[in-house]
Length: 437
Picture 1: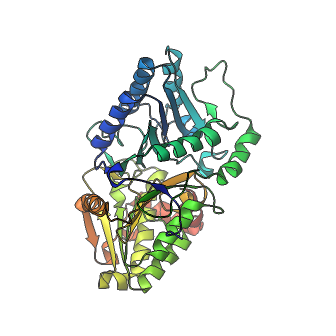
Picture 2: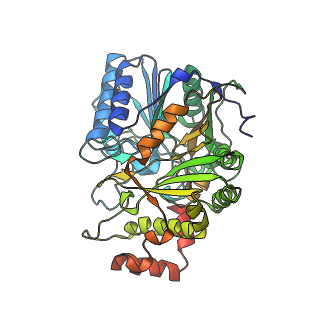
Picture 3: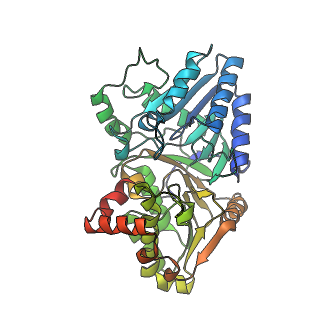
């Protein structure tokens, strides 16, 4: 499948790696300041905090300097209109957007995309910062921790691709199938004049989006990049490519995921890969590097059980495949660095096929959220060293797991966590929770 998959031809020098949040932020701000034609940013959210306001200010400055500059920011509609989980009194990022645009001489478009009628049923998890003829691709959203505005960071992957055709393809999809859709609405409307999208249009948006793909003139040889979309289980090109990367790999896989909660079909594919004698390296965040981890000294809330649920999923997988861990075929690397968190996603196969994506490779990403990714096929071997250096950088703060017993059991968890997880098990709710969280 992958050899026949068409892509956009790309020069070896057109791909660059930005290894740190600081490099990512600096490149993003520099590109925004120099933009001459169009800026299209897609992320789960643009936060009302110092880093979010800095990005928004940079966009406003670029627009003021060049009023003809076409600027569009797309975020998840529901996420923009609520406060942070566990934070009371926060009414949503859209209030910042509304306030800034009300005072602007040259406002920009900030649009909310309601992929589903409720946030827990699916969100806009589309990624890509398209600036003129370049694409900065990362799983990061835009706030303090992703951009390391202060002393903490959320580790992600960041790639810069200089390709006018890729930028045009990704921008055209956003313009045609999101910006112009009747379910997508402005998040900068005044309170008095606000018009929300019709509920029927929101409910039917998922059907329209599930049939969308990126358009481009495909090449079938040479170094190329293939932009991929995915929503729902059917007709999901991104999911199919993930499975093909695993099934068609001849030697090895290098997989990054923030937490280990793969759908069953992916678990089976990984097991087949191991049974054929091939190698897998999985880099996953330690539970303490999870977005929702709550240290034992802080007051516990229900959402804090998630990292422990994911850890038990990893323990179960490691126990089942301990034979592969013993033989060196399966190498599980737990990432942990001070109080920072881990948000890397993607798969590399045999050192020459690389999927960079915002997908968490979990049941929610597999079926509920609107996801995308870029498949890079390196037929000339020009990018092998770059990806090897990126992988070495990723592994810098990891510890290899040599036995599943190194992962804690439920009995060793803090009392509030143990109580909640036992209750979830009694109610047999863990299966449902893993599908939507």
